[in-house]
Length: 432
Image (cartoon, rainbow, N blue to C red; front, side, top):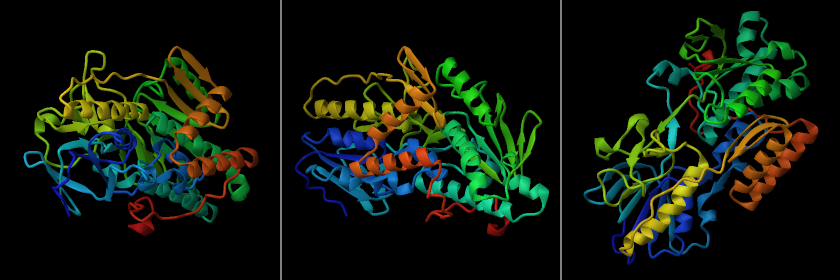
């Protein structure tokens, strides 16, 4: 399907996440042809996946068609494709739509769920890294509430009404908080046969505090918010096993549950073909200060899949959207410099701050030297995320949903829908 006779150098971008989209947009006036490949034809706003998972938003309100983002960019082309292999010597990638030539390759494939080699956890727990997985989480939550309503076995009913979130980063904290709000505002209203006290929510985190990447002040406040919402928190412990029935924690605690959601780690996701020396721990791609992949002249990596190590950041940059956006913007400028044989500029991360929401009127924010908690941080979180959404229509839909949910404490999005690429619901014996 490839055409090698393009007049301008081709920049091939694999991945339509924050990094890949930002890079392509910033190459709008560059003397290049941009080709972006992604296995989805839409960009996903991942920070709001937990709201899809708990029925506050519909999936299509946080997904935006990639072609619409670049509707007027003349040097841009998008193909729906899944890349399988890179042949750097031939400057070709192999995808399910054929071989594609490039002059400069940028890997922006992001990260996927990391189970740290535990096949049992991978088999029985649900991740939440894309819209389809968020819909799976929503389906399981609502499905098990429905089952609990008609289950007379006390042990089974308790398991159906017990929800465990593994991972105390922003995703885990926000998901646990949203499930607790379902219990507070929805359970008795939609399921009058169920009692709030019967529904339990647990948050399990391997580090000694939740939101470990944020300030201690934010972490302490977030924990208080969570505990005040009735969430039981286990810090400094790890999940040792889960067989679809009993979750075992290495502190000796066993939890009977049919609902375990995994937000405990990520690893880089990339095609085959890179040199082994270019792959670091956690499946991330080693890159230098201009995001050039180790061992290559014309291959680059940006976003969550990249690992740029320096004295200031021995473990690389955090896997957050603002890093991906800034790397995409800087690499666009550096690619133009490389094409024009001009000096490049090293990437320097400007940390604008970190935020996490815990629930209604509850959030924490670390902004440079300022720290906010509570209602103001919650308003700030909503404002930033609303502005960051792609497309006016998505902004409008999300704002409308938030407004309705805030004043009515209700949502119309609690539908049991099994997504197209549904992972088998191993927690449901009928699905085995």
